[in-house]
Image (cartoon, rainbow, N blue to C red; front, side, top):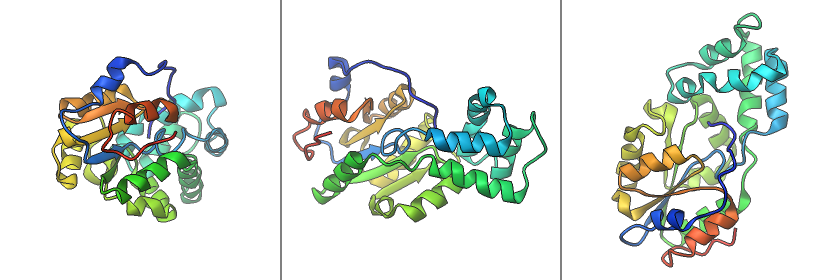
Length: 230
């Protein structure tokens, strides 16, 4: 998962142009956190901070410091949370780990309903759908088990399952291989510019997600895709 997004301003003509590939879009690839779901819920963040015993003003940095290793699967649940807690207390017990992973995963489950509705409309229209997410294995199991609509997505690529994270190029290549289409036939939607830039280097059309309204403007330039009201 990722951190909070900064203010990137409104959609530009360059953004619209960069999302327009040489041919029709036949698959849409979604990031999960901050695209299909909202950012980490503040209440869940506060609960994790309380459970971990990390000072409130230090928790954000501690939470994201080793997150890429956890997302990639290089660090286990215990390794990750021990690293968060270590400067401030004893290594976490099994019971504390269970509470932390639930609070963490639940914090990423505030779903953007218009985005999910559009993903379903894409599938109904014959457009392939995919999720390409940096997500630790513990979250993948917890979230997918509880959100039935994720299991309807054609292709699901989670970083911890393949040992690669965005923006590493291999993760995009694996996603394309599973989709079975060239990059130019795919539209990738992610809230982080570095992830979208990496996708474009693999030949994938991409758009940096800012809001539903902004995405609707981009989609209006793709008549082959179902309309998105935002």
